[in-house]
Image (cartoon, rainbow, N blue to C red; front, side):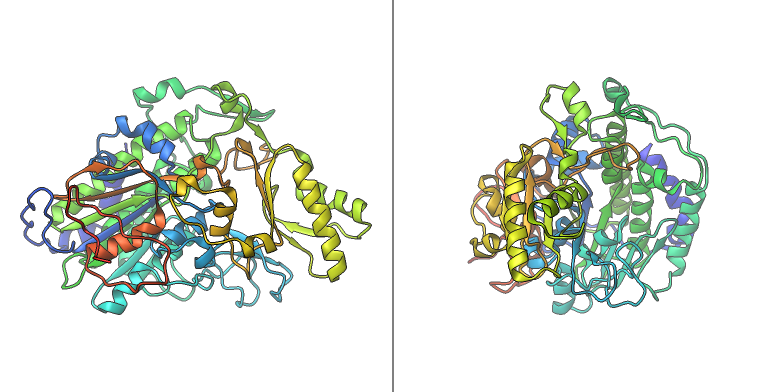
Length: 557
């Protein structure tokens, strides 16, 4: 199915490109373990919510694109090592080499009481200075990212390098692309778009026209692979909702159903493939870079959970779509290198956890909802207002309302800290002062404490006055009835932190390294692969040696 989706999209979306692109003569295959010089094209793929658990579960079933990567250099236990395991922070680590505490991207959304507009919630990829916008109706921007990306470093070293970023979400494209690039595109709801004021190109118009044919047509239910049949049963999550046996049938024009299906990734890969050919990436004098954010796995995970038939079908189609994409790259004869990872992992819905040997899984208690917490704090402190403590949910960063005087703030913080520490579902509570005083984390990411993980996400200017972390297997979605999401991520636990980190290049000798590494290691590793000298400071990651045996692919220290 994935191959058919991508092939049909390639034909209808960019026929001119497919017919007229210049293809160089295929390069000779390097001897095993000895790739010839720097690759001409870096392809960096983030599969949103693709946990190490999903990779390990489906690795034996992959036969196409994922199978190719699984026979490369594999770090099956990579880490988004920080506590704020969300889309924007995770993507900010992949090509910057920095943890969220240094990228400045502490969450998808945070509260900034200094902004002049009435909406004090800030979205990670918005420009808050644009008049009339809000966190839900915003002008996309790289405004909040504080550090350069690999693409920016490449262009600074050699302006001939081409850097392009494509994704299903604006925050994925922006955080991997950074402020210095040639083109950036993301799905705007019905078409691919870019920053305000940036017109689409004829190539993107053709892709959008092709995707529209798919998007506007009714979609029959997708086939269920044989290995998915045991997962094909309904799991009730509320009196009105069940998941587990959805097969992605949809009505034409249903934007929500389109993006939460394998079709969405096929559309993103069709645009990426067309841009590679149209811009002749990998065919110039310098190494080029394309970053690709595949978002469907995240929408499937939120909408249906990670262990049902829906995710099983998604994994099969992701594998097939990537296989078709790599086959097309092979036909171009480009010497390319692929890196694939994820912005975070994900946790299945507690209702299915309880069916499958995890009887202690549960949803957060209603008492942890911000409205309930504020009512309790008001009664305990005699402070007035239903917005004493500002928060985006049952856990995460929380801010004391700035209207409170210092003594009132201290009183509220003490009451809030005591309340959360008494809650059965809460694992840890850290104050801003505690996190500011904590040392930077070091050592293997699998050995970090909760304080270490929280510190890796901490920004002194943007983080809250209080950080609340829930215990394992507690889902912060209190009531899934009427909610688009039944399962989520964002915790400090390994099911959300662990992601695969995979490298593949023709001639690279495969090996697995099961010890923990970090996604911040990707940037310096790729810099070493293309011979890009980095400063000794300014990033958290380290180069990973991708050569099996005594040789090393990393620069001498």
